[in-house]
Length: 258
Image 1 (spheres, helix red, strand yellow):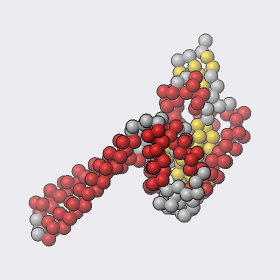
Image 2 (tube, rainbow, N blue to C red; image 1 turned 180 degrees about the vertical axis):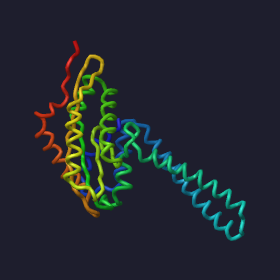
Image 3 (spheres, rainbow, N blue to C red; image 1 turned 30 degrees about the vertical axis):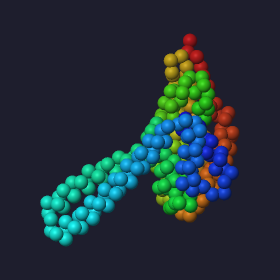
Image 4 (tube, rainbow, N blue to C red; image 1 turned 90 degrees about the horizontal axis):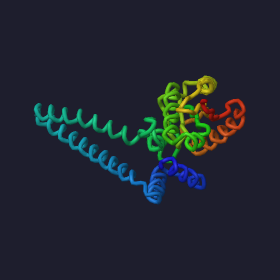
């Protein structure tokens, strides 16, 4: 359901001049409601919990100031324990908010609230790569969606070796972020080597055997660069890569075990 919603939104925002995190969230809610997707209420509940925890944090800070003024050691110890517990709870909530449930990578909310500023511009320098799994629909239609999910998770584990800063941007699309100290050539070789190694692996599911592959592209970005512009560039480059490497990769090819 989520990939379907994000694809609808992706098509909508292509026609817009400017997209803010608030507008994206609004579009998500509208499309989720149209499709009767009820888990959005859970997201709202998490946001409310997070706000409440922040309010408690603020109250504890104020109480700590009063306790310090009154030299209340016992009160400070109680506040200290409360703050430690609260810190763990806030970290857990942040993980729930920013982590994709299936792949355990970061989600779009993390992208729009942590990596980008309120104007959808990058807040630091670095490199971005888009990785798109080839022929996931073929796997879903011919072997099953549960196998498709397992393939997505398998790919996620492999690309997480390259970087921990990964955002699941769509159903089978991932954005990888690298530090500015890296080089474009090094990143390319790492990702390309991973792709070539995957092409050597034969997967066997019951009576079906198949291989997986992905297409990718990379771009450098600087602080203040517009995310949508960079995304448009790497998206077009990725599809060029997909067409260029089709004969070599062979994509998904089912073979029946006899």
